[in-house]
Image 1 (spheres, helix red, strand yellow):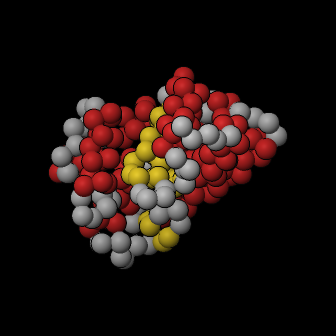
Image 2 (image 1 turned 90 degrees about the vertical axis):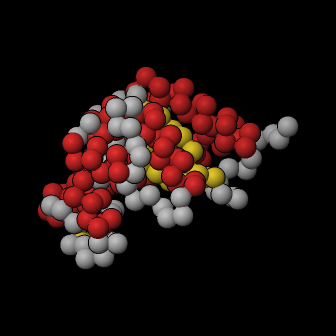
Length: 194
């Protein structure tokens, strides 16, 4: 059994999660991803179990999407916001082409994990799971990541002004959440500030 400093490990994980997932924690974005280097599988399972218990009442789930030799791609998402995206006709139409069953967010996430780990090409429909606008996800796929209008947190193909304003909102949220966390706010509190 590998020993690790649980408090320090949790603090490091939480800090990284705030840096990359604050808009999801705050309820203004459906999902976020970030890469994290765990020292062991024991450490990964400990952190993910603990963080999921902490965030359960907020409707947030934290899952590993893909493990590589030394890093894990983590997906943080709000179940309700994801469900709202999945029931839109445009999203359903796109996702069903890739084998998703959109009535069930859990099955969709499981299918996404399967596609990430077993497909030759990265599944770019992940943008919908992250709360990107449908037009941006479709434009990225249709244009093979070329011919975009602007670039920020992702490539913009749809409403440029609205998306750039959204990027600013995400930046402010991240700064505010990080400041609150540095002042002693818990992850659970940050997940209720929306």
